[in-house]
Image (cartoon, rainbow, N blue to C red; front, top):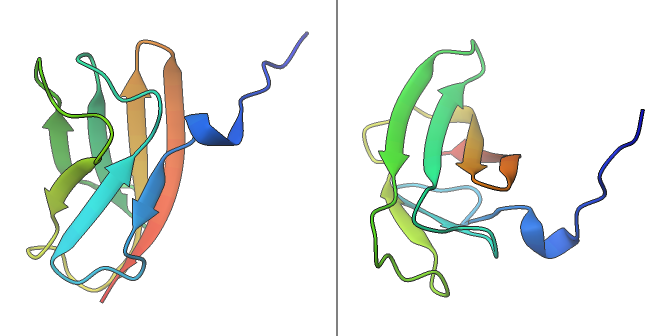
Length: 91
């Protein structure tokens, strides 16, 4: 089997970390067919977002996380190039 190496730019950058009200997800792979899901540590899906045509890629996607309870969360960024993970803390 082979493993496909990814450049560091392809992995999502999530900030601020820790987050309070807003999380920004930025990746070179964000595009018109991107879906972002946020899970808690129990594996329960808490948020799902889909990017629409014309979403600006350079500044990242702003996500309202104010409704999430404080804790550790996992971000799953799915694009036409694959699935990329990230993690953040909600204060």
